[in-house]
Amino acid sequence: MLFTEVSALDRPGLAAQAGFDGAEILFPYDHSAKDWEAALAGLPLAMINTPPGDWAAGDRGFAAVPGEESRFRDGFLRAAELAARLGAARVHVMAGVAKGPQAEQVYTENIAWAAAQAPDLLLTLEPLNPDDMPGYFLNDFDQAGRIVDDLGLDRVGIQFDLWHAARIHGDAQAVWAKQGSLVNHVQISGFPGRNEPGGGGFDLTGLCSSLDEGGYQGWVSAEYRPARATVHGLAWLGALKARSRLIGA
Image (tube, rainbow, N blue to C red):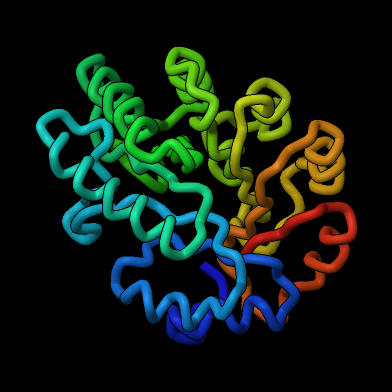
């Protein structure tokens, strides 16, 4: 979502120049692994998402969509292979547009299957707010926490996106206090505009301190929409890096 002023393959280089310690690529499927290896040039890759399907047609992944089990599993194996090739330790498993008990059963079965296929990967489950993602199955952090607890798999956790937590529950700090122990990936942004990180009543330096104190081993990733050219809005990065071990773009 950053450095969109240039093509996707040029963004990792700009991220490295700007002082980011890693990159996060939402959907790396439009370019070859060889192209991404060249683009990353040794910059660590924090995470990728599973293939979403036809975004323009409304697809948002398939993990919770009854009848699409084969499509999900084929896509997950593709994501796992690419993650291994590019050195990404985490894959965000996109749930898709679905609802109801059958969707939850399909979702949990698919997650358990995926974890067994890729035992070296960390899988993240991200609740997405219904305004941005209408009909998305996983749309509540309490729901995500229950599913992660029910699965009981060490390598499956919650993806805590500050924007979505605030939009869904109104108080991102309270969501963190309740679900933080289940989190294996963190994304930050500003609120209420989803621009540069800061605001919304969420203490980012306190978050980084709590991550360090709690032994968090993951990334803190910047997923926001720059208010202007990305390089002109990075004043937050140096200050926050001083309080955090890893910041990913």
